Image (tube, rainbow, N blue to C red; front, side, top):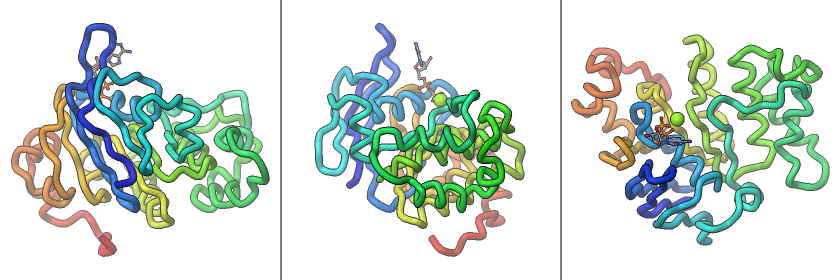
Length: 248
Ligand SMILES: Nc1ncnc2c1ncn2[C@@H]1O[C@H](COP(=O)(O)OP(=O)(O)O)[C@@H](O)[C@H]1O
Ligand SMILES: [Mg+2]
């Protein structure tokens, strides 16, 4: 496994946000973490990237225990995150924002920039535009592009589809698939369970700080409990096969 989260407990003060979460992500996979608001999805990602300390449990990445490794060293080790709410630098240009993603590395970043502009042509068209004046969808693309600049082995995405128009949601999910196809492992947190399950290989369902289900994503799409709780309870849409990706 590239990333192993083993029985982690995480607190905010006295409040337990994660009560023994275990998640595994294999190299090359897209794994998704779904669950309602407050389930602990963001906390799980923040703990992996080192923004929240563990109360107990451990995190192993690429064969090394990183439970106590500072966040910037985790970035260098290959953990990239596009944070919830995007967190781009509004006063910096698109290109400057992208280059910030590579700050921890030295050298020439033209190849990475080229790849970011290939994945997100819109960013290429707007290199010089201030990040803060980009639309919500473009800022989301910028946040993902910036995370990719660090050449992560695993990309952590926190609700990349949040607040986007349906057409853009579609686009973001297909870009995530493309990023994965090009070799980056993805851990995707989503409230948009339907679409997340359609592109993921495996999935975990989080409820109030605990994993309540872990299974191949396709299985969860057909799971009556998951359908009732997270997919609007309607069997129609998924059964009709909205997923047109035959590559999985
Ligand atoms: N900064 C914080 N201070 C106190 N409690 C928090 C904080 N952030 C999150 N929590 C609590 O931790 C739990 C998990 O939150 P979160 O990881 O943000 O869930 P999700 O991303 O699944 O919506 C929730 O009960 C939430 O209220
Ligand atoms: Mg969240």
